[in-house]
Amino acid sequence: MTVLAGKKLLVAPLDWGLGHATRCVPIIRDLLNNDCELWLAGEGAQEKILREEFPLLPFLPLKGYRIRYAKKGLAAKLILQIPSILRSIGGENNWGEGQVRAHRFEAVISDNRYGLWNENAFSVFITHQLRIKNSLGKPGGDLLQKWNYQLINKFDECWIPDKEGENNLAGALSHPRKLPSIPVKFIGPLSRFKNLNIDMEKDHLLVILSGPEPQRTIFENKIIEEIVNYPGTATIVRGLPGERNIIPSTNTIHFHNHLATDDLNKEMMKAEFIIGRSGYSTIMDIAALQKKSILIPTPGQTEQEYLADHLMKKQTAYCQKQNVFSLQKAIKEAKKFDYHF
Image (cartoon, rainbow, N blue to C red):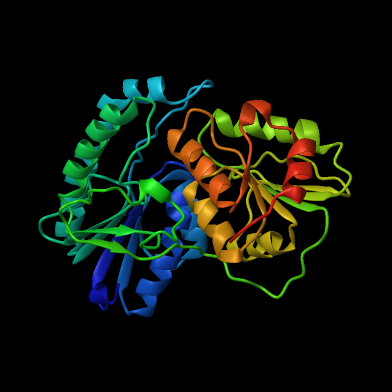
């Protein structure tokens, strides 16, 4: 990243969950340490996260893709949204060109926003998913990869937040046989959290809810239904920054709509087990802190389903499917699981 030292940059993450924004935090910190002049862009929850982390940085409003989920999976619903996604990509490309001219950005860093390449600024695309997992088999995967690379190759560089070689987190997603034609750099896993000198509390759970609706709420309701009978203590972070409605806490179960980075970092260190989605940003955070976890992929999101299987085989995380999830059983099995970090 030092090649960008001292330059004026724009950083913009995708609005698919909070992970794209949170994994940009260590990149932004590094760029600030290299005397870059930084501007940020986004909307909604992503904007709240970035403004909380960097209140002094200028922020530009940028409409997200606003991808919608179905109750029973994503694939069919996503196919119907392709025309809207393509319009969003075209719209953000026009938006980016205007912002580069208006603010004279020397570089643009896009986390999975395909339209933010620019001929007049050094353009970087961040992704861990070069090979897009899908339910259509190898032919569908080959077609999606070709389309993915056509868009990525419009950028100047592609940054992969993973390790090169076999000792990696994302498996085949970030290590396909064929790479894009532009320079590809493995920049290592990204996490905004640090190992703190805080002791783990036995039988304390941290539940981190995240992702698009309605699956976030479906999983939240399942957790609430079961955790009332949990004999230990738990902290539940709902993944709703800016939400005013709160769920009352008890002596043993504490609810938060959102926690700032430092507070969440402390809760992660205290927890015996972290329960959440098998989203890649969550996986990078757990790996950085070497915490035992119970991960539940979002139903129908093939990327998370693949990562859950991959991590189970590597014994990095214990995983269960949402339709058979049982808190009591998951904790019992996780206590016997031989974790390897």
